[in-house]
Length: 534
Figure 1 (cartoon, rainbow, N blue to C red):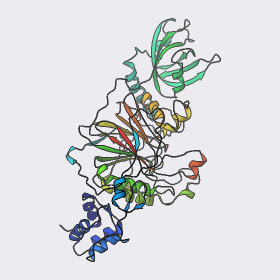
Figure 2: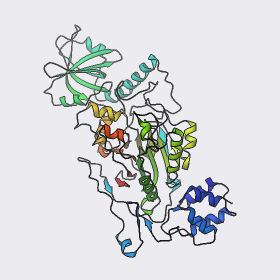
Figure 3: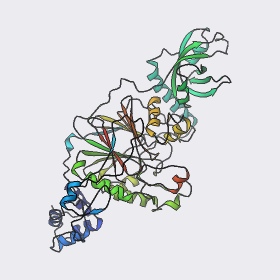
């Protein structure tokens, strides 16, 4: 069947392992026999080519050899972006080494930053029948919140009930109203949401817990072994405490002296699921197309590498938000934009997405720079933007979403709440240099954005879509533009960096981004390699 449209030309090229410049696609589509022209262009393509150029196509249509216009045997090294002569001596020394990146201190995720080899002719042969990708816990199309008082009551009650249920299996908790009526000196437990945290004049900690029946004060003595855990507490998270009631309990002035404190947490015995075959997923985020600092060359090197034999097992691409730079996100952003129209930004992103192999299964969630509501949970993109970003039939879900990839549960969350966790907790518990440690805190709390009313905008819904009902096998975030990974109770936490060099605004707030990296996850072992393209 003749190839009648540029879209079908692109599809056919992708199936054969090639991309093409838009002008080259137009030339092929306009040929007298597009099918024969495409076949000839592929047959006569240089051995190291991954993308067909207009000059190559013109050469084929004119009956020539179709060699690139410079007439040389040069190839582009995916690590450096430089052309190097294809001599036998140099071929023997490939791949070139990329810039070294020190592994963050304390990382235990089994990953390393790895050099990227020179691209070979595409040999991708994915097993489509073995693939599976399902999405759950997605607010898209389910949002019912109106901002009324009742919505806030509903979402906090839902959070309390679901996280409380996880905790009640570990403690014999009683409602705060019942605890207030108990005689002094007895032992009891409370499951509650933190409504207040303050230190006393003696350096102890007073934590006020609230449930559906009332509130009750709980005192953590500074000399207790677990007192340091108080530094990890955030308002509105749900915890459990066990302890002894003061002697004057029952007269309205009682207090619970805390003997132990429990988070919902990930069980230490948790065993993650893995895929039944060797298959990989690329975890990336924060592309920021439209920014003057978007790293188009690094992205192209990444896309070219995906066409190589070395990347033949990469069948999934999971993008954790901020496809584009957006408009009006921060002060004076317009001075740092390369594309000022938001729709044109998404059109440009779609063109860059077309560079990756068309046989990839792609899933995207929005971030705070994207054109969706800022309040979390964020529904997926609207139909107009979905139509623009339709390259390779990419799937779109909300932020957050749980994406089950061949049996592996990947919790995708853009990560705005990481700012709040890092600001509120001590540096050794959470920092921008080690973003995975802040992610550990969210896993411990079993909620991706526990604190309401701070830096993270939260939308009240009938159901709290930010609760982690089940433990993910992989937790993937972005937002902070820092690379970090590690394992927390066998859950792999990955913050995947960005594709944007430092902007003037980032420099003003002391953000030094880790840009041009692609964590590659083995779904059958949950081992990870981080590849650098910058």
